[in-house]
Amino acid sequence: MSISDEHRFGLSTCWNGGRHGSNPAALLDEHERLGFRRLEAYSLHTPTQLAELAAAARERGFEITSLHAPCPIAVNEQGFRARWGDWLASTNQVDRQHAVDTVKRTIDAANEYGARGIVIHLGTTAAPSRHHALVNATTQQGRNSPAHLELVEQSIRERAASAQAHLEAALLSIRALGEHAVGSSVRLGVEARDQYQEVPSLDEMGTVLDACAGLPVGYWHDAGHGAKLEYFGFLEHEEYLRRYADRMIGMHVHDTQGARDHRAPGQGGTDFTMLAKYVKPDTILTLELHPDVLAEHITPGVEWLVSLGMGAAEGAAPAYWTVQPPSTISEAPVMNAEASETR
Image (cartoon, one colour):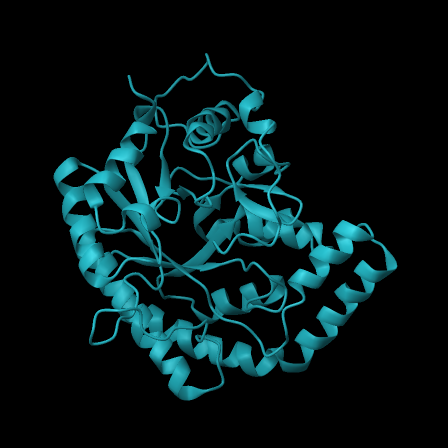
């Protein structure tokens, strides 16, 4: 029995789509060598690339479990990436409608290619990002130092000043998208965000989900985003799951070293035992890893997760796996916290 029979994790193409985006056979070969038969298509594939990937996946018996919007990406007449931003919460109606129309194409693609879920970034407020400043303060002066705590308070004040208008715009967008998905087999997952100024906040997530009652819209958890927001002192990671796990569609699974996420499981300090408590049999589980994660760190990380009771395939009995993270993972070098653009 291969490892792919022992677990139900998918692997996001954010890890290797940049290397193999125009060569779906090579992309799937790499997934298969690592023991994956499921994948999430990340927001880097053009319409042509996504169609080719979906055809190759279908031919080889892979399941595309989810698409990370916008997927396919918006392209111009020459086939190159068109302008794009986190505009679903924009107060600029032209930008917001452009974002809605682009994500509607993701919904249509998911329905065509059999994906069950879509990951949606709902946008941001007008507050500036203080992420780099927070990284510098916690690294140089320590967590809970006066400099760190002042940045937290500043971030809260700045976000509050513009949050309501952007939340209202986001609600218009997500309801339009939910209505577009009605009648399909696709569910939309509003993702817990990466930075504090973004939409929705922990509290706003409940407002968003309640506003979409009756629509195929739910919650998408991101293990690294929750861990980072806790690391910076904005919230408790598990609170997302206490509140919204009953409406959870899927989860991005990756480890976090301080402010550096999208690492292989075992490379950081994420509490996967806590996360495993909230995973249901129908939860879409996707490893979302930065491209610099080494291939040899991925399969041992999956084995470790399954040993913790997370993501085992029905009927699998991986009793031979260690309950400790493999040493090759735990000793992996810590990367620069600002280097990742995977979100």
